[in-house]
Image 1 (cartoon, rainbow, N blue to C red):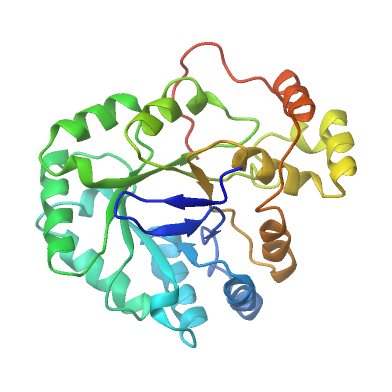
Image 2: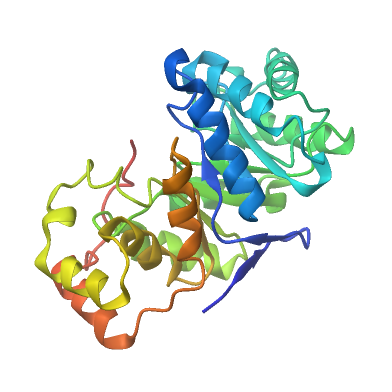
Length: 284
């Protein structure tokens, strides 16, 4: 199984990162969430994903607090700009605010959160300028389907898109039909958000599945760990599961090298099959 992901700029990353959606919203558990991020970094996780939208900056602020004591060069920080801020009038202000909250001078990866009314060409030009100025080291997109990616590739500079972050888990496999193969052909990794299906919250039958229970028991892991392992069986995919608890972050990291045998993958395919036709991109 592929152990690391290599981006087009030759940066090599572990295939498991930490998502920070809904982290930082509750002041009462802030300490626990900071501890969770720091435990992940100490274990070897270097990718941390957040966004200006998450908690209106509270997520970025919490991540910034958590990473203060670490060498910045050892981390790979990702944030996202809202569509209405992704043009010449607002993108620099958005980025500056994100950098201030994170306590850093640059982002390793800056993503367009989803498509909006601002022309894609304008956003690409802005991203390229920010990269040339050293404020971001690379950029990418999120929630882009095949047509969006094809349009992006026709724009000068669009080929510098590093990743496409989309929803992907065992219960939502639509990307496997067309988008994932397209990304593989263009050497663009898929960054999977909600790979645990929010611990089954996005599809409850996952955590009640007899097949998943039996396979998880075979490998002596939890069903949630199995859901993460499933996503990692696909080449060109890395995942950013969210967790605000130290024990869950470390449990996620434990399955980074787990290989499911062919028979078990076939059982999962039968229990939760990928669609045999194209379906709309799933978004949360």
